[in-house]
Length: 315
Image (tube, rainbow, N blue to C red; front, side, top):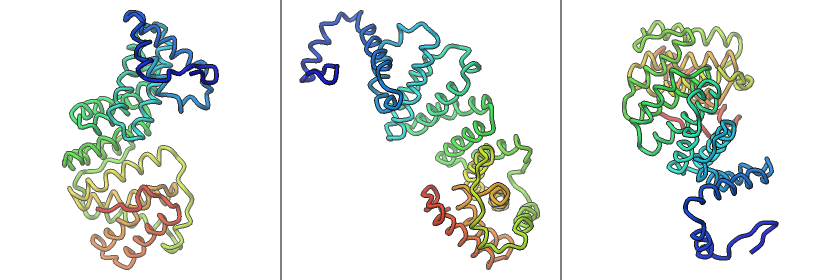
């Protein structure tokens, strides 16, 4: 059957029979040739749509690719395929693409192609975590944390490590990961801060609010700075872990997240912190009326931004 300049077998059995006629030692070359043709003739805007067909062919001939640039290009395609499969919850398939992508890179790729190498390993660690290979994920993430080159990269690794430790019911280790990230930003907190430290951070909220009402805060702008967004993500992961280890630390985390939101604008992560502040303001500082209003603000922010990420967030 001929389709727009190409051919398709009318039945899988016919395809299998035709494939069996190709000598085994020539099949990798045939796959590579088909993959190269698919990649060359697929328009850029349709490449992601056809990514699995392209990558599945090229991967079967990858051993014949010697040029470094072409190997790196195929690694990039495997990263795209892995991310698409992960987004469809096909975690095992995603893992196979990410492993294949890593295998294509040479020794100096970690420095020369840092972003590609880092992304492949990060998504691989996440898929290992999601497929139950938690020891492998933990080891990979620990190594990645030392190779992260930016605040955003460090935050991404810290968030995934926190998720891993919370899944393993190791809240104290999740707290250690979050505090280590904050330490790199010059924020040196104890895992067991005093009530006075938490109170100072709470009072700083009121200082930033100034003459405005709590209800007026709903009109603050959205957060756009990538580093601030990354830090708020880490604080959001740290919050539940802190809740199970030290309530003063939980209060400190929540208040710092609120202060960051007041300084830099809102993101999805601001919503649960305002809701959590509803509990902290009353339980820690005896300010129950303000706590109710802060909690209502968190709800209003969800409604205003229509965010789904934290619409059901709860401790």
